[in-house]
Length: 141
Image 1 (cartoon, rainbow, N blue to C red):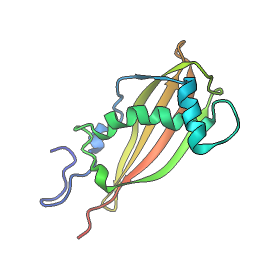
Image 2 (image 1 turned 120 degrees about the vertical axis):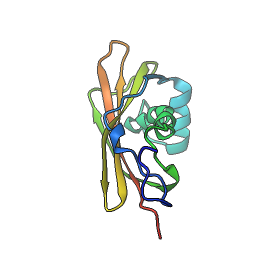
Image 3 (image 1 turned 30 degrees about the vertical axis):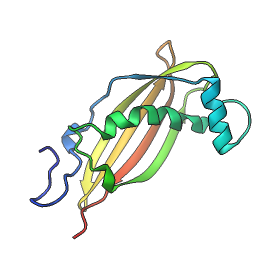
């Protein structure tokens, strides 16, 4: 099994999956979604920059559920999050969200995974890029 550790341990993230790109997923920046986001988190009117998180979550299940990646999500903690904006998000636009496994490393028995999500507009221009670092913790003994 890709990513499998020593006998009896939980599977480890498969470093050979680094660079894999997933099928693009459309995500509508529609009024109802933005209103629901504001209802939960508040903030000024318009589309908040952190709304990108909702777009990421539309693709994340495809990544973490990928058998080739062999990620044990029960052992994952979120390490960091960063956003790179090329322009503000626009209410009413449809983004195409494409996930890529930007980096996979193992250190000290832990797996470090950087998932990069590129959000593009209908012209194909990048609107923003989100990067999440996830850490698959080593099995405790």
